[in-house]
Image 1: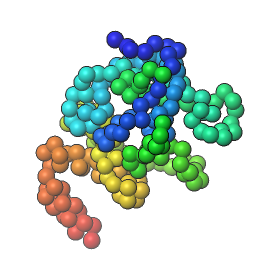
Image 2: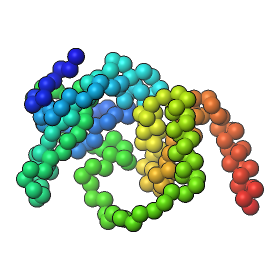
Image 3: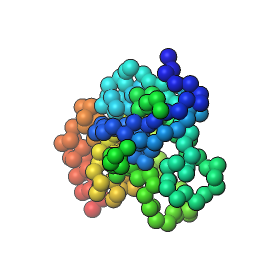
Length: 93
Length: 106
């Protein structure tokens, strides 16, 4: 069951994680909106070690304006990043 | 957010200056195609279980090796490490075969 819905404001966790994971440093700690709910997938942290990745996590496409990510961003105002993030890396914002 | 999150490896470079991009198109060499085919075959047979395993091995090569190797050289190094880990091939067998090939190549 998906914890977040389209339009929800979420924060991408900035917790430390030494294992393989699919959250680039530059989005950690930033807020965005759920653009869509994608399929559920196994967790990369344990799949990377040959384990089964359970419990599986809903993956969301998160919309973040580029101006929010990069101070002084000079591109067109509507530019955004759409990035897929696993539920266990998201918090309510 | 207090401290800025730090990159977790040599692959985690989003937002850093990257220099000029080489836009020239290029074909793949035969050995690159072989590595690609071998990894997909190992995946299909369930020996490589998930792409996360390959990504993890590539990210674990260490910054120096990661920077030095080309894209498919990283794949080759990663799949070799994974097959050793999985017990499909031993480090000794692999080293012996590399030595044989080096010898025959002169």
